[in-house]
Length: 234
Image 1 (tube, helix red, strand yellow):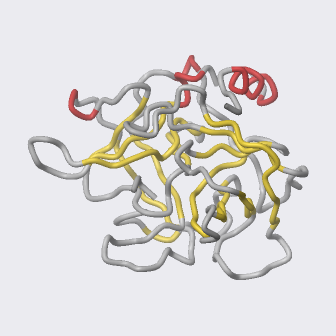
Image 2 (tube, helix red, strand yellow):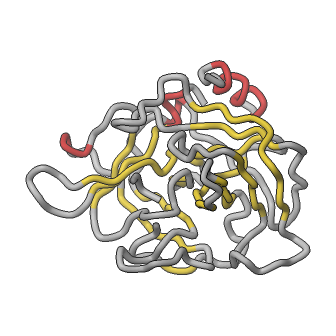
């Protein structure tokens, strides 16, 4: 199924109608080894700037988490070190937002959203789209990677300037299962600023969207949720 058809299916499921936001326990990614990564600069109604992650699907669309909603967005592509201006970085305003029609801001189910760019992204060695896992890829993936520029510890006041990544193992424990999502547990995971980034698994496809974190009722390591892309007919 090509990416254009995937997008048509996904957009039909969407309408125009504090959460996880850091890579904890990770390491710096090889520069530009993840050319699909997008960094979102978001303006709130009060004028503050916040950040989320995202990932490029084609020339026109970026996927992110539905709770990453703002008054306006600028999508940064081709970034490795945030704040470093190079010729390869593309800054593109967002024209339209498509949060999933059943997104629940209380429990963060269906936490997935498309952003339509104001003009087309230019593909290059540092800017390329990623494929999406489809319904045929619905079996539980095991070894996956997450990415982001979020804070690298719970004590940090600032986001990471460099793109970070960490390996996570997807769990099928009952307490870890949330509707239409994957889950990982342990010391490594996303944190503040990483929401909306991709969960990329063994075959190089995006299987999930970084969504939320919670502490299990019985104690133990924190759990992390990722909106399950194959569920949405991608």
